Length: 343
Image (cartoon, rainbow, N blue to C red; front, side):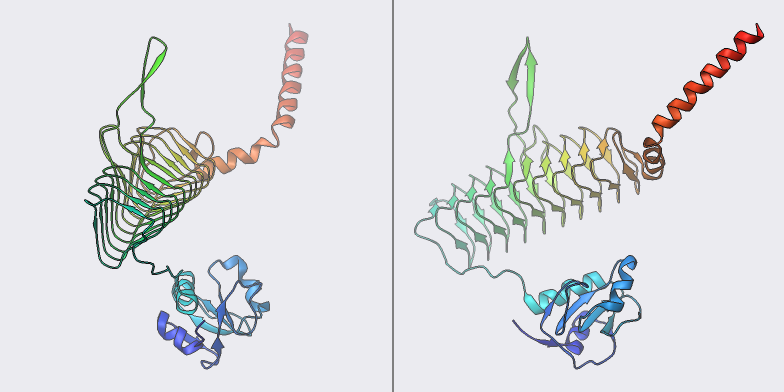
């Protein structure tokens, strides 16, 4: 693991230094657990008191604070911390195995330069894989699939026939991309399967989490926009279009034919019914049930989901509802008694 001085890290992230620039940093850690030789960060103001007591050698901050640690001052400490972690620790290194003799690679498949296809992976007929791709054991790449450069498909990921994967895409283990959408026509009490003739398109820099399901479109394609990150165990229905740079936290469910704008954030276990339009930069709270279109910039909570400020006030009243009910019943009795006496 490489060691870096505070100056080297500050130069790397484009930041100013308050303190001893020659301090050596060996690794990264949290505010509470960091010790000598480690770097940490402060991005949430509510954790400012912890900076005063941290034992870290250096801390990334947005502005000068009271601390014994050397301070690296930068506009976005969290992003700078990411850069520092990459500098110190790097990303996972993938083994350079080449093409395993135990992989099943169709003769008509086309592979780019420097690809590593591991044992028991399957690359089907007419599939096209770009340069520098890692295809781990148990991966299935279906017929006529196209995959760009620098992609990583972890064990047991599945890319169904005809789907398109951009550059620098990561598909985590056990994810399924392009399976049939949940489409059935019910006739006389029986459910008849509708052919799903669309595909899934994963644009550049998308990441699909473990256990995710991204359904192919019934007629239109399902699209995950550039730079969007889909957490573990997320289900995305057929024909849905997720805009660029969205974040879907684990266990989100998005039904079919939803149109979502750019830079949206969906909290864990949020659900969106089909055929809705979600605007740009929308934030949807955890476990929210979205049943209506959502305008640009909105923050919504609850089931059914409503404006976050209204939802907070409404939920604050829930624990007082029994007392309110008792007061209302008492008032009703008093009003009824007053009317009786006055008649």
